[in-house]
Length: 344
Ligand code: AMP
Ligand code: TRP
Image 1 (tube, rainbow, N blue to C red):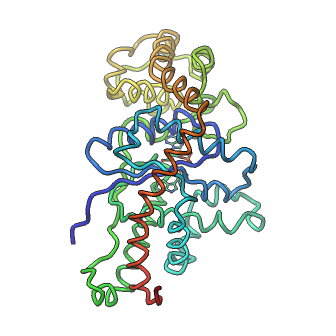
Image 2 (image 1 turned 90 degrees about the vertical axis):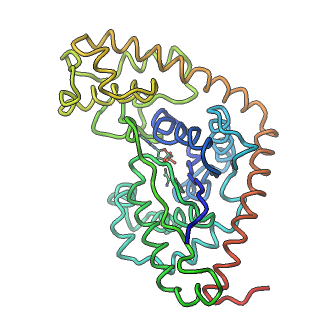
Image 3 (image 1 turned 120 degrees about the vertical axis):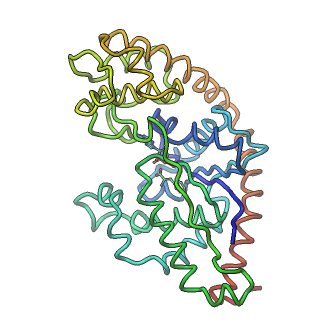
């Protein structure tokens, strides 16, 4: 059966939205809205898998919403909402807790990284997080999921869950008239020169919201001075830039900055090296700082403006949630029939 093409993606409201989120995810969200029906979700249920200050969480949720709007996502044509307003996410996640296998979750590298040595003490939610992510996507039967490279494994798990549900319940799916397969196997969209933006201080670590040093990342709300200063101070090596991509391989910091420039400008890394190869880093960094300020400055300014009007932001979220719920409720009705729950 052919599934209606639909895009879903999520961003956690955990503070410090950065250039990695922007290039790895949000710019893709903006581009995809030209071709698809899209749902973009502020995943607050995911956020609380680690402690969030209840006095801070609403602000962080509104900030991600503001970033979506400021980047150019059309809230009228597409659906922007926060996860906790659509209870069906949690409802389907429970069913998936009973579909996914312990062994599958045990392999998740993000859980291992986040839990570290303190496994006994992390929340059960952190462990089950990939099942909730699968539910986010599949409750809309979404077919395409734009994400950064770090989410690849979670997308593979989502496909495994969809596949196992379709197989385990094949007879019931058929008996209820849902054809051969109820859930699509969603495709990740991980493309371009900046699917994994690295820390400006350490080319072996990914740029992250939670890294203590603010110099490791460019925040979407940084002003022009902060952006320029962070790029000037970004770690590099003493060599000039290479003229070919191969020359970037052993140089993670140089590779990262070239990838950022390429993504911001919409060209390939090779295109950047054609322009700057053989030149000094200082010249390239000045150009990168100017480009970053030109691209991010207006977004940061618009975010700050939107943040002054939480009533408007909340109305966008409420409207989005109402529209999302119509789709989600229809899926859950079918899932209940398929699983064999007696419905009202
Ligand atoms: P998160 O902040 O973890 O909710 O991530 C939101 C989106 O940004 C996901 O699609 C991530 O894969 C993406 N993302 C996060 N960090 C990076 C990074 N350093 N480089 C590229 N994409 C990223
Ligand atoms: N796990 C993703 C992250 O940390 C966020 C997320 C939650 C998501 N649900 C999703 C991304 C569904 C894509 C689709 O970045």
